[in-house]
Length: 434
Image (cartoon, rainbow, N blue to C red; front, top):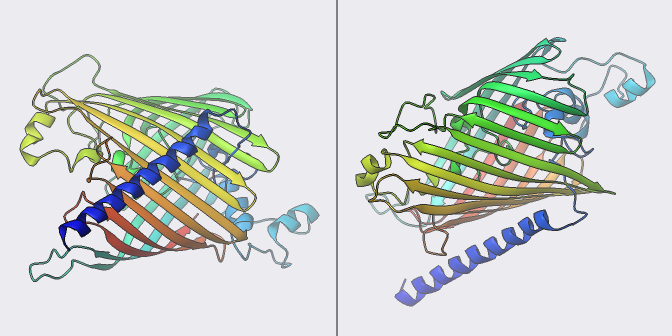
């Protein structure tokens, strides 16, 4: 390709990134508008329920409970809902009282339950640039097990819950939760202690999104500390004090300059709204980490290997983000934008600023079948330079039977941040959950 063609490609990529950023900005503008826009998380919130109604974790994600382990996967998601002996759906059996309804899978006793997520995936990726020693492309063509999680939840007292999550990778989650009031109260105050995902952003179960793993919020980035959760009606607030570590590091023992604080504070605040058939949830999040021994994963491509020792002297990190979930009939929309700034203690390193965004539009024409459009963008610079990555994708989602999801996606990535450049990708996932 000649220089003119290369310049034109860079121009097209830059225009695409600008268009993506404008779209995200417009979406986040809804957060600040006095709109009637209202939204709910997909599946669990179609009836205006908070994440904690379907998940044991007050912030969502992980082990399911209540409607999240029973009504939603049995009746609302699949094409063929769970039927009783009489052949009638469980909802009809409940109303008629003609037969008892089986307990959700994994509910061993009224106070002890098990759950899990298992994802088998096929991945095909074809990069743009030839990177093999013989000039061939390093094409990926493989099966993968991106998630294998086992959950255990125990309600040892009406106000005390213990949760354990074990994954196929070395990451884990273990915490205890104390409620000031009974679980079904309209308002409550809770305290959680242990190892968990710090409250920030949208835990939608997709660790490969640019707004999760790319900014230090992947499944392995759980942290240790305690959290205070409070809610009153549609308003929920969470604030946590944690070590401020990344990945599998669990203890805060690093850093060459010992300071008084050296921890991280994370917070997430959300508001559910409703206006007729239109529902929404809007939220803001913040994170401050003091004297971390490593930079945010967003800046891995920006920091030269020779600067590793300078980074280890300490990094102060700030994250700020906002999200929007909207639901209107068969249409669901998700938008999230996260800004990250790392300030290094070493004078040889300048501060890094970057951001990541995710948008997803899903249409469910009939129960159990959905189509989706995704747009992801990540850039370790706040300026529009040729070092960001943009991915656009199409997908289809199928829930043929209860507790089973099938998903197929195809996408195109444009990137100047990797040696292989952009790529085409295809993915097929089989997800079994309970």
